[in-house]
Image (cartoon, rainbow, N blue to C red; front, side, top):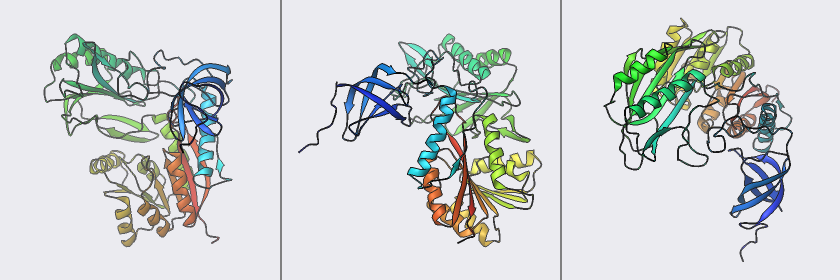
Length: 459
């Protein structure tokens, strides 16, 4: 006999919200049954229309808020109700920071079984707008006209965008200039279904501490019509632009970049700083999109590492060397490993750029390279990890446990996998001391964290 749900489609129910989902929808319970409702905030009571039901949860639409959260604000973006780029503009910034701290604490307890861990207040921004130093805008056609913007909430259709409030104002304007030129010249936007058209993405990035700008035009084929017109319009209006690049992506997949990149004007790279470390950034380099908060996060990672100038440090997901070189200023020697060979080449170049000769970089899997280093006599005092959202590889966690460093600093972009991995490290003889949430992406549900674990010598 089929289980009877407490609600059915088209029911209108009054609920109180107690949490948020990963995409910012409010979570309410009706007889223990979860309803997910966009635009609702924790603590609010509202009438909701049930739109869809599944076995364990359902979806609803907000009809009327009966009791409004004191942390609700009017979102300043005029396409916020359509665009999927932000999820929390209707939540006061103070409310966002409080929520993110509570979320990290709850996940550590629920998934990691780590109760009593000190979770500090979230480190936020004085000005939580215009912070992104990079924007990647897909291009499409609508009603015969070229449009460019972010994807609509929970869809793959594009919302045409005139400006973005969380993107640096200079690169925001440059995107609109490229869009205007493309429309004026009749450049055909790429069509995913037919695999025809020319312009696929407009990418712009700025060095927030140098002001240098790079523009990347991603095209389906080798040809970029009206190339000189693009260069003229961009360089004459924006003298901060130091590099204009064309990337060719002929794949049917919806990945942004293809394998071939060519500089069509200016330099191959732009430069930016995080603290005293200077980085060369190419079109496809990974570089944190909020350098101001990146320094805040790295400062805390440096504090947790407890370096005195003598330590050997291993950075297990080093990328282009951002954390490695930051740590190398205070360490005896830093060893960085990264699976992407191009990133390792960038890391080596960045070490040379900063005249740091106490950093060694190697391409490969951390769980393969680090044991080889250990066998060669490298004994880490501190291991730093900054893995992707899926967290650390199981073999790497076991390698860290076997190496028994004095301290592990875990930089995380996903509280759930952070909690899971800290639980493994705790079972392996490490004790989690404290966790610092950092708001790298205001107005969104994302939260970064830095955790400090030490070898438990009492066992």
